[in-house]
Length: 195
Image (cartoon, rainbow, N blue to C red; front, side):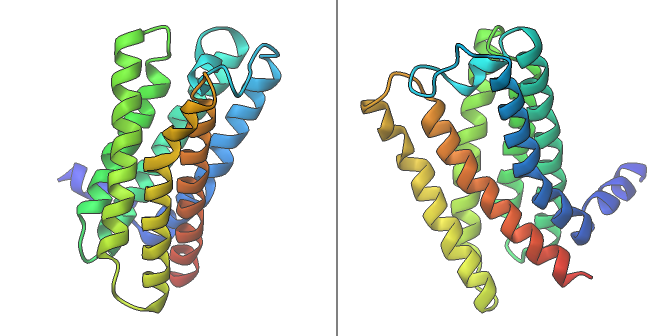
C-alpha cells in the first residue's frame, strides 16, 4: 500500500514535467564538469564513460548519471500515468533504471557497465519509438510523437559515426542530446498543461 502511494506521488504530471525539464541540464552539467577534470578526453577517441573511470571526473559523471536516471524514472512514471498507451513509458522506465546502473557501475566494472549501458541506449530508443508511434490524441501530441520517431531513428543510426571515429562519445552524445531534448520539450508541455 505504501509503495502505491509513493508511486502516485512520483507520477504526478507536474512533478514528472519538472523532472523532464531538468534531465538534460543535469546530464550535460555532469559531463561538462567531468571534462574540465579530464584534459585527456577526446570526443573522437573516447566514450563518455571513460570520464567515469577515476578521480574527480568520475565523481561528477557517475553521480550526474545516477541523478539524471532518477529524474528520468520520475518522468517516465508520469508518462505512464498520462499516456493512453503506456508501453513506451514502461520501456523508458527500464531505460532510466539502466542509466542509474551506468552511473553505479562505472567503466572500471567492465561487464556490468556494458550491460547497463547497452540496456540504456537500446531501451531508450525503443521506448521513444514506441511512444512516437502511439501518440495520436491531438495535434500537439502528434507533433511530439513525430519528433519522438525522428529522434529514435537518429539514435538508431548514430552509431554509423563509428565509421569515421574511433571513440563512441559522439554517437552517445547525439543520442542523449536529442532524446533528452525531447524529454525537456515534453516536460515543459506536461508542466504547463497541469498548472
